[in-house]
Length: 150
Image (cartoon, rainbow, N blue to C red; front, side, top):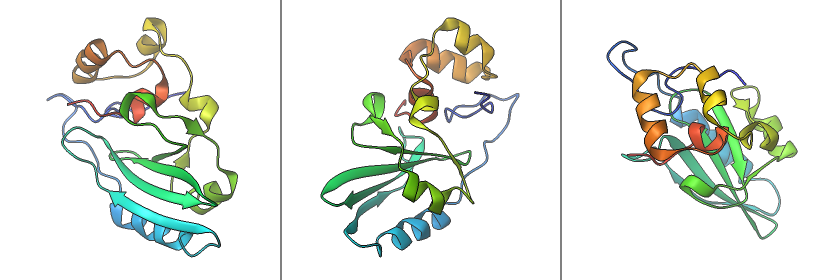
C-alpha cells in the first residue's frame, strides 16, 4: 500500500506543515450512525499530544467498535478494541458505506500487513517519521497510520 509522507503525524522542515482532516465531518457521520437501531455513540476524542487520530467509541448490539480517522490524511479504520500499539483492526461493511464517500476506509488485511525494514524502505516516509519508526518499531501498517507516539 502506498502511503503519503507524514501519515504517522510527524514531519520535518523539508516537508512543511501537515494537512488536517475534518474532525467536524467525522463527528457528524458518527452522530448519524448513532441513530441506527441498537447503536450508541459512547464518546468522541480528537487527536491529542500523543495520538495522531480522531477516535469515536460506538456500541453496536452490545459490542464495542472504535472508529479511527487519521488526523492528517483521510484514512479511516474500525477496531474491536485495543489501544495504541495493539488495536484489533476489523472490517465493518455496513459502516464502511457511510464513511467511504469521504474517506479511504482501510481493510483489516491492509492494516495488518507486517512492517519490516524492507517494507518501511518502500514507504515514502520523511526523516522525522524514520526517526520515530526506528524508536517505536511499528509492526504493522495500522500501527504506523494510527499511533500514540509522542
